Image (cartoon, rainbow, N blue to C red):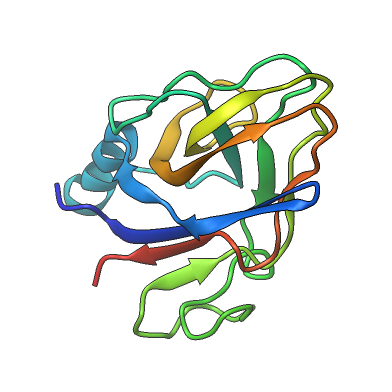
Length: 169
């Protein structure tokens, strides 16, 4: 299956250090590919998740499954509820209207925040988007352009507009 999302860019803020730039090797998970094929072509039901959860990995993920997700030391996935107000419409950044644009791009309209680490989480190399706060199904996975070591006490957020997804046009 052709990659559904052709571009993703991510900006992280860690304490005083900024971490930004496009991610690489974005993959839609086998789980989501199968759900979309069944929904679009085979008349099977598919309920989109009510909330998207972003997980951090210290090893590679791919469309078959997640890598080694950070754990312990107060780790939890960052999340935001799926709603027009929380994800931009395709017609403009920060739009809260139903999508009507031609570029196929959306981004987070709200800050996505992770818990403050109580110990080092290690070098994050990949990220995934899930349908649950723990376990659940991975929807997307992608490699970061540059790994970022997350240390005790770092503040980890996606500022509004910094997680951008573009549907392949």
